Amino acid sequence: MKITFVLPTLCLTGGIRVISIFAERLRKLGHEVFVISVPHPQPSLRQQVKSLLRGRGWIGTTENEPSFFDKLDVKQKITDRYRPVEDKDVPDADVVVATWWETAEWVAKLSPSKGAKAYFLQHHEVFDYLPQGRVEATWMLPMHKITISHWLVELARTKYGDRQVSLAPPSVDTKQFYACPRHKQSVPTIGMMYSTIYWKGTDIALKAFSIAAKKNPNLRLVAFGVDAPSPELPLPANAEYIIQPDQDKIKDYYSKCDAWLLASRSEGFGLPIIEAMACRTPVISTPAGAAPEILSGGSGILVRPEDPEEMAKAIESICNLPDAEWQALSEAAYAKILNYTWEDATAHFEAGLKVAVDKSKQREVEIISSSPYYVDENSAQSELKEVTEKNKKLKVPC
Image (cartoon, rainbow, N blue to C red; front, side, top):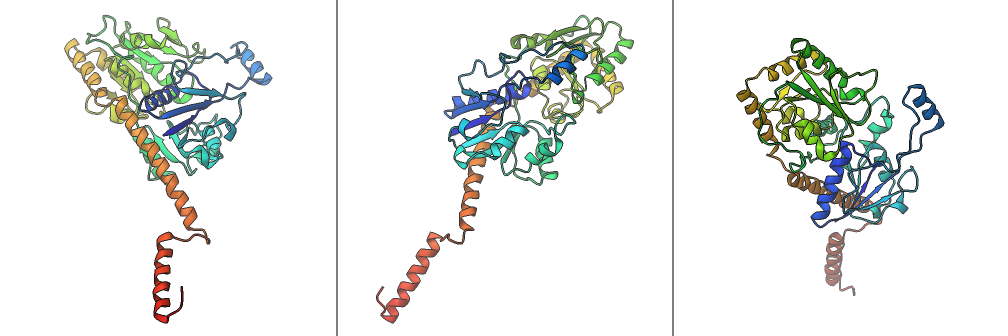
């Protein structure tokens, strides 16, 4: 197939990583893959002033920001400026894939020649900082949806009435995220991703760590994120914090922890869960994204949402485990993520694209057959045969 992915701005987010992996693997399967994206919008004067007043300094250019597509052998194009992607930007293809609510609006307006329309959903992005009505409207567009977790499939069914959604959960690259069998840390150590985005739940994780540290003063925190810590969400004084770590070194931060926290209020999937587990680090998580199914069967600890006290108890529980029991939990976490590979994920994604193409063809047939000028070939042949037989009986020349 000829496949086009329509992306927003490229960067190092988990969602972009997942798309880049699918794009590269589909190319290796023999598909012709093309990626179109838009550059970062230039900050307005108002945004610059706001940044200065908050003490964050002048917003610099992001033209050369790295992304997960930088080293891939996939055909790419970035538009001349931040604007909607149009027909002139996109080659004719079998299927064109929207990857974000705004790109879904763009893809919906593309000509049929650009391909059957699919919508790859990695979250339900109805957040206060986005136009919620427009986001929700994209779920109603006539595109075949492919998503990454069971809760998003169920949401599409119950909220938007779509009962035919393809599920393609991402996997984890065990060549990038790995660790040898190991023991507990000599100093009890907890890890987390740091983000100022509210739904990421950093405030909950920090509160849980603070509560646990009161009972275990030696408790240590390791964290990484994309930005410097905010004064509104300060890290503990003895925390080890890394800003935008090298992608090949992230495994080292996962594997120096006794447990990894995911305190999110909302997640589409929760990639850090499987990345940490691939590094043999047990995970303590709220039931966000795919956590309920991933941590089932004793491969981690699920805690109530918005409950730092229960998360703190889980931290204490793991830190107090005898080494042999901790190793058993570590190995259970590692074993769980080996059951599902990127080959499996790509096969599911590819199948979803084929469904999108089939649905598009079916839609074309329905449109044509509903036309008052449409004549079904089989029916026409049958009618012609019937008329011919009648004419023979009446001896009327045909």
